[in-house]
Length: 300
Image (cartoon, helix red, strand yellow):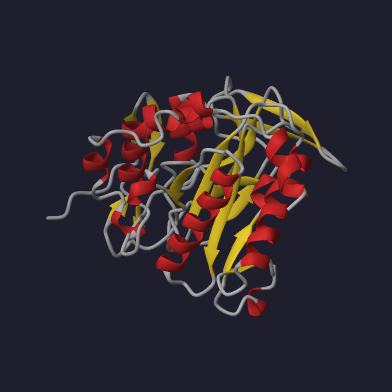
């Protein structure tokens, strides 16, 4: 006789409704599995959400249903959930501020599979502390993303900038550059745009700056817009709403090679991954000034 699903469970001190709801039908992963994952990885996730503004992608039925985005703090979160009011052009929004396990698990309870974070902290919302290069292979071949990421790394090293790669959790890669707080988000976006343009001009077979998918012709789109004010990117260790329940895995550069399978990091094997050394452990001690690189790339 099949056990009757429970209506609620407490995990990590947070009440989780309908924990046995299946989010990934093919694999059988449930909401409980997702909550348990975030509880287990939270010490690795914390540095990427702490005091950082979050945008919410809510998928209450997992892969089976629809998702919707929400920026305003939703009802159903603990009353003491930290928020930050941001004034946009036409209205203000109370964003959820990450950094607490209770906040993270409560968001998962509301159907937030992925963790979408700003590039800036709540204290300095217009001043990012990283540059993100979002590498999107329009061919769908991950090896193309690998080739592009290595080219991005080489270009950054020429500008004396250290970088850190991770899988996006989808078909691409993200390359992060830790920077000292100072430049405005418009300057950081401008830097990412200029470097992308230089790479596309030097390697037009590989790179494109075309925003229209139909015009990319199988090339790799180096998306700079993750760096704009209030824009977000999937955090390291964020699970993605994709078949197989992959998560965004921080990598060392020696991992970034042909044959790497981004789907190899998922809800079914994360415990094995957590036993490995953290390849991004030196990220926050590697923060660099961006101003010299900004000047240099503008002259290329």
